[in-house]
Image (cartoon, rainbow, N blue to C red; front, top):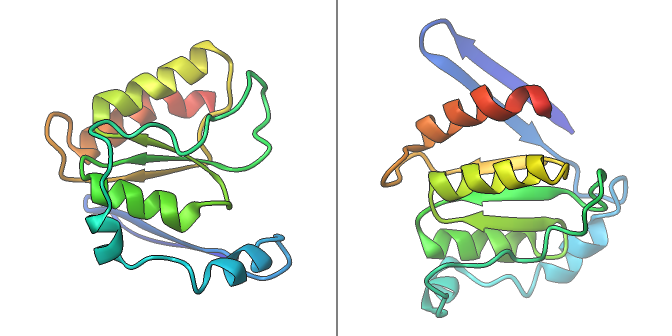
Length: 147
């Protein structure tokens, strides 16, 4: 895969990551198998979702190593959360937080239990309460040194 960075002083940075979808990561078969079964956004929107989504999978027992990648998805839109869970199903574990406070609490609990932090965080920018920028800053201040 590749990782690209574009940065401008005082304005911020953009990080772009691309990952191979071939047998080098053992994911090719998972993508091929799902290629015809992944629902459209409209199909996902029509599906009923619970008021407070639960983790797509239990993040696992108290170990210091994730057997599969862990993704923390932070978004107040249930449809977006469902799209993330469906898109990543079978590729990684996904924990869905409906707001910034819930995401920070999840990270605190993982640190207290000596569990690994998520490998990736998908973070909505416009959320009620804490904005995505505020959540990101909180994560950097409180958790970055521990990861």
